[in-house]
Image (cartoon, rainbow, N blue to C red; front, side, top):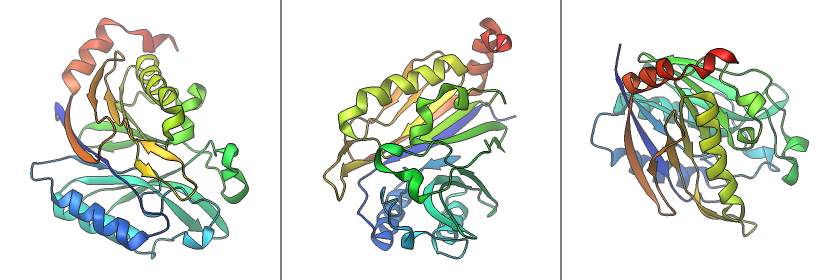
Length: 252
């Protein structure tokens, strides 16, 4: 069983509703990674930014982004993940896609829709959590506002890593930092948070602060407010030793 998981956090600006430009930019960033990686993590709604009120931008399986993710995953021999505006049947979702190098796709639909900007009026919430087994690790994805609800994020499936992708504004960034640490501490797992930077169409500023928090709540990686990529190696042995020494998770 692999003892380390190598992850790449991509923190970047997103251009409003410009799928082609965003994917081209992300391709350049991903190709900049020269080392071996297991998982590449992109922000929430990485193709369009957080424009939930324009469902014309929603894609299905043939929309282009899925095939782009499959191609990039194969080229880098790494899973690639992040969320997009997605259409299925007559419903629209904020959908997290996790694409393996072999082309296999897993998905999670955002459960807690952000009512402050009426996300719930345009999109359908998901009702199922997801745990992905990948290269000997159990990965559990969530999207942005989900992180505020510990009952939903409770680690009942004993995941090794929880991933939170976001478009989290700078004016509430202290909440983001606190919540990442809280979820890691209470769930005794690694927590990875990937946020965007830049200003959106409505003038909302985003200052990143993507981070990796370990199973004890300690920050082991922090991207501050700049455009960039950070590669972090997670230790399965350290995680297991901590959980054996402090088996709080057994008392849920």
